[in-house]
Amino acid sequence: MTAATQPAAPSSPHVMNTYGRLPIAFTHGQGCRVWDTQGRAYLDALGGIAVNTVGHNHPKLVAALQDQVTKLIHTSNYYHVTLQEELAKLLVERSGMSNVFFCSTGLEANEAALKLARKFGHDKGIERPEIVVYEKAFHGRSIATLSATGNPKVQAGFGPLVEGFIRVPINNIEQLKAATEGNPNVVAVFFEAIQGEGGINPMHMDYLRDVRALCNERDWLLMIDEVQCGMGRTGKWFAHQWAGIQPDVMPLAKGLGSGVPVGAVVAGPKAASIFAPGNHGSTFGGNPLAMRAGVETIRIMEEQKLLANAATVGAHLKAALEKALAAELASGAVKEVRGQGLMLGVDLSKPCAALVQECADHGLLISVTAETVVRLVPSLILTTAEADEIVAILCPLIQKLLQA
Image (cartoon, rainbow, N blue to C red; front, side):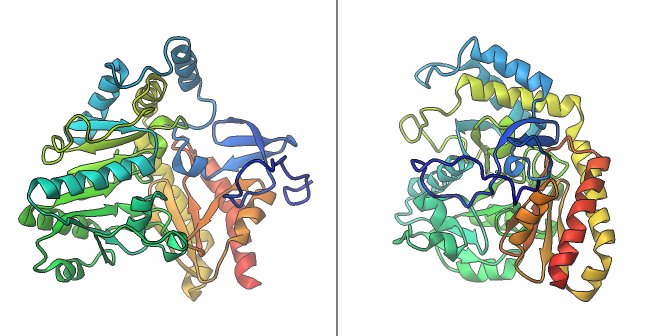
């Protein structure tokens, strides 16, 4: 029985209709595999949308979370939380930055970054601060992060949007300079090192260095959204590190807690003291359970050398995809296989949303983003054998779709 013909997962009339779900519900997972309510196994190349860093049911993560639940789950930020201090130290050491604010989601982290930029401007006497953002960007679905996002489809129906954003294309330093020339209100440049929802679009290394230099020259904050591309996904702790630069503000989430909701804003010296008590907060942010998940995630990543694994297996997967789709790449039916490490996109010449169900029918979990891009963001424990399995299932289905 295929996923398409098996009974749909139970749904509730009381849950808001906000997701276009497949008719599948999962019961348990192990490593890079999950099983549905019908007992069918799937290879998980989506990783909870780049969240399940160490895979499903990792024995060390499970044991740590079970231990923490017996001690403290939540206390609130009226008090010191020692695990916050521990996780903050780990993030500061790996980023080279200085201070961390904890929240629960990537949206919250990006919202905090926008507030930091505005406060930075107001502290300099700028009444109407403006932030440079990018075409095809995605930073969240709150009103402010939606306004920073570069997708008219997800913005539709939610106007008026928040003002104070200047939008530019990626990887064009001259257009960034032209869009901001003579504007004294610009306070920050905000972008994803690799755009996720926008179609797995990487910022070029030279461009990252040029923007860093421009921010230094004009006293702007460089704010790099690493929510999806950070936490080892590209083979370094943070994707911008491939360019040898350091941002002033870096939102994190997704893979930081391996499935437990955790968000963070890491700040360098230029931004670390902008917020004062009362300027920002989060009820659930930095709770002991989430912090334990973050600490254990980093510990497991280092013990299992998952950064190196992401780089090696990711390069193997990218090369295997390019080899299997060589004819389609030559003809232009497949535009490009792009990304880095275990954050890859296969850009097709036609819409391919149908591949999500097709792949599930064949035991593979993927997503499609920007209408034409197959997104692969599996757990960082993925093996080369599992990478080959992804290729063996996915590529024939891509070829079939393109020939239809």
